Amino acid sequence: MSPPAHPPRPRVAFLGPPGTFTEEALLSQPDLAAGDLVPVRLISDVITEVDQGRADLGVVPIENAIEGSVNVTLDTLAFEASEDLVIQREVVLPIDMHLCARPGTRLADVTAVVSIPHASAQCRDWLARKLPGVEVQAANSTAEAARDVAEETAGKGKGKGGGARAAIATSLAAKLYGLEILAADIEDHPDNETRFVVIGKGIPARTGHDKTTIVVFQSQDRPGSLLEILGEFAVRAVNLTKLESRPTKRGLGHYCFIMDCEGHICDELVADVLRNLAAKHTVRFLGSYPAAGSEAGARRRAAGKAWRAASNWVDDLRTKVRPPE
Image (cartoon, rainbow, N blue to C red; front, side, top):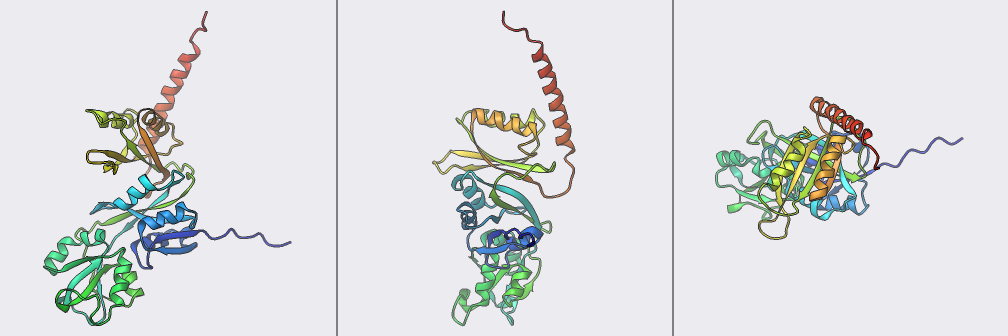
């Protein structure tokens, strides 16, 4: 009798090249780390790889504690990806930024710093204090910045006045590409974290500690419309953990609302919120998925118990309705 076949390893696309914070987040998840890892140059391309079936899962950054949302991730999921593509889980990673350069480079030699703009912005104050007037250049990822600095030759990729370039990157990228760390932990705030999401097809099962993400497009812009949307959550004691507006790409003044709330679509309270919102507005569902962290969902469970009691009360009243004569 032949041994049972092992399931194929999932193809997992992530923002590359190797050495990005996204890869570190991926490697923190044993099941993802065991997959066939596919580095992709752009965040939007990671999402496209999964959407078009060339990868089973994708890992992308979606929010940073200092700089806020990663807009390209939100916009690609909300406006470009198919409705089958949803968030599978979230991963929160502590972020330590390092200034890395070719061996022998001194901090005084650096006249240009390169990184993904979201990372450079997280070190804005440090750069102003330690490297005033430095030229800040953009890359598609922290690892791409480190790789480019490592591959530089004389006369190529230098900063202003012929000085050296350095990259804001991970310690992993510095090790992979043979760079030295000129300054460690240069982020402006010590409690720096980035939230990443794993994307794929199908809605994960309810765990009891879940999060749901939706996009709400108002049916019409009028006074009180946002208050009415928020009221759907408030009256059911469903806690909103994030709310932000994004332009709909249809001209000035046209916005949608991206919302994270506690709970899963299989929770009756969350389902009731979505049902009522969808009856009045266009709603894009981006996923119900396990939330990061281990805190208990006591408020959600209490609200669910109250909702079930109210539902049973209404059902009981309905049994007392007389049939038509």
